Length: 197
View 1 (cartoon, rainbow, N blue to C red):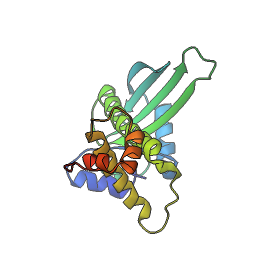
View 2: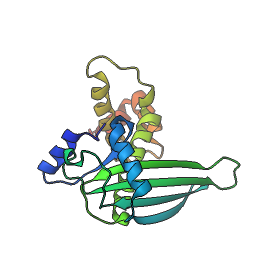
View 3: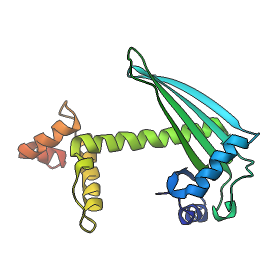
View 4: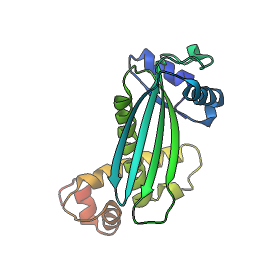
């Protein structure tokens, strides 16, 4: 959704940098990047390996700054590098098959593979933690709100509630438990809202 020419242009106009995920909604750009990594010569790369909860994830970040196969690259304001992230999740003590994924990005940054991999990883860390909590504690993915701006409005309210629940530390339980307690206990709700009880 964010990988749009207009968005890329506005980011550059605001004197900021971007790393935009390229997906199949940009078919030509996606195919051009695949071709670039297939035929490109000057590819910078960095790999990391992290053990986490019974699995090992290996991520390889490849970057090309001297690309030749991107059609209409002038339409993508500020594009200076293209990025490929390949990840492999291997499960220890399990017969579960390895999970692999390849993602592509365009960026206005002219930097190394290590720095780009770190920036992308930090973004996904924030994104995954926030959306996972909103889904578990607020069942956001199961929401049936469709009319007008209802889904966006409730999403904002859920994020406000999540921040208030995280700020309240007297209860030793998860966000979902705190949310239920606030629903049943008016004194605790006032405490979450930071009102004097």
